[in-house]
Length: 76
Image 1 (cartoon, rainbow, N blue to C red):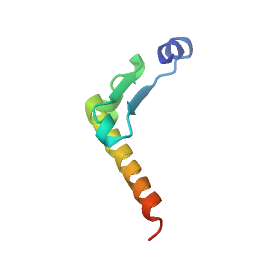
Image 2: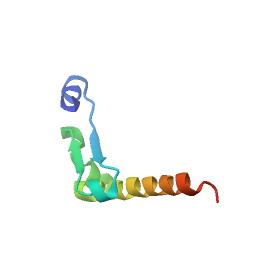
Image 3: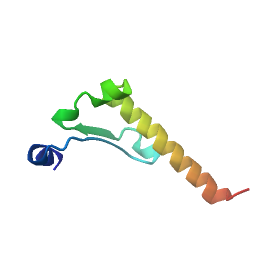
């Protein structure tokens, strides 16, 4: 889909995906980048796709953890 939109409309994209369950999804991570955005991570984030997946996993796992604590203990 992204490749089609890139070719048809000139849209460029980079997508990072990961699972949200730390003890089950730790190995799940994926990036896809269209041709016009291939150097985006390196030039704008000073990172490669593996590092970006790691940053996203850290963010997602932390978000899930904080949400779980809030659900369990509320505003105590």
